Length: 195
Image 1 (cartoon, helix red, strand yellow):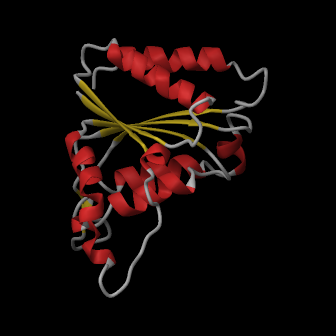
Image 2 (tube, rainbow, N blue to C red; image 1 turned 90 degrees about the vertical axis):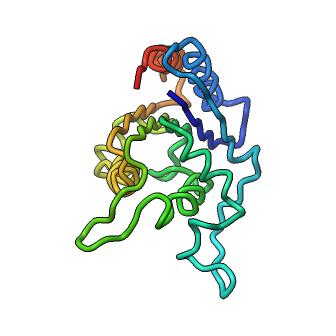
């Protein structure tokens, strides 16, 4: 299994980075994971801004040479792991900008007759590891599960990715947030996954 990790947090001395390190540690001890590539969007200086004009059209995003290397990473990966905070009930703008550009028509999906397109990323799987200041059940109870619906239904299922696993860790700024237990849970998960 080839795994791409997309890390989206601007601080390497953070709990999000500790989750990233535990994903890496568990993966390195997993015989089913043969290769790992890391894309740190902030360190990379990824530009999340969409620009469309007479020279750069939305319908041509799937061939944009400026993001070709990122398309190759997604094509290469069997499993894509996203690590990010939940801010205002959704992923950071940096990650959403990456999604806007990479999950484009004729690369991630293809329009066809009917209501739904053909997903072109079939066979891949996704794991989302997210942290938030609020309680773990906040997105479910107060936001009608908006984060998971956005990521799973509106994005991953749309492009053909059916296997999506979520870890939403709440109370992460609280001394009672059980951070070490949650870090251990991530380490063990990535040490054992086989698909």
